[in-house]
Length: 146
Length: 146
Image (cartoon, rainbow over all chains, first blue to last red; front, side):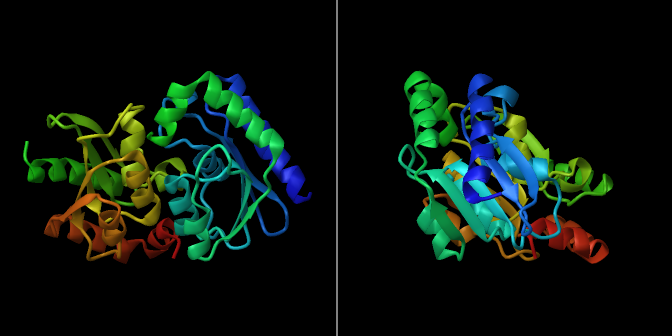
């Protein structure tokens, strides 16, 4: 599978989250050989869990790994500082981001710490977030601590 | 309750974690008026959950809050970068740390971003971590991505 296909899986997760009434951010973790290790989505609303951002839920679903060497984390939205700190702490070497227009994320923080970051600027990821931000601004503000 | 009493609650959580076979780090979140908002402990081993550090589990237990203004997070061990990033992202203004001898944490990262940090250098917190690190080095290495 190529980059676009993995991002499509992350976007599927985000859409599921939106349908559930949640924050529509999805993520997938992919191993060195292109194997899907985990998929997740923001579940703040669904589980009443403030730490369940898309990236965090994905890492939880992937379970305990001895090492994140060779992995790539695909996320529909550029990471907040919780998720960016986690990426660095876990030693995830590569992050592919759907879009960074609807949120000022932490690409510089990641790159300064050696993480390879690619931003796809995917219109479908962006459109879903814009719709969510317009329809449920209070939930969005809560999720990013704004 | 004073600082020492809240740290004692966090240490109780850490000891519960140790008894369960887990990583013995505990945390409590305290509101502006001194009300206990949540308590948690590292549950990597117990729940197979790599993001369930003590601080993260505590924030999950506290549930959705509209604001963390006025809160203090007590943790038996200085935070890793996942937990430090979360503290900044959530706007938690104050962190009280049990000890920072058994792990090189992120006090400077927190202070640079305006978080008030107190390190108690508590011998009981330190002794518990030292025992864990000596008895279960592989679990400890996995938990901090070493």
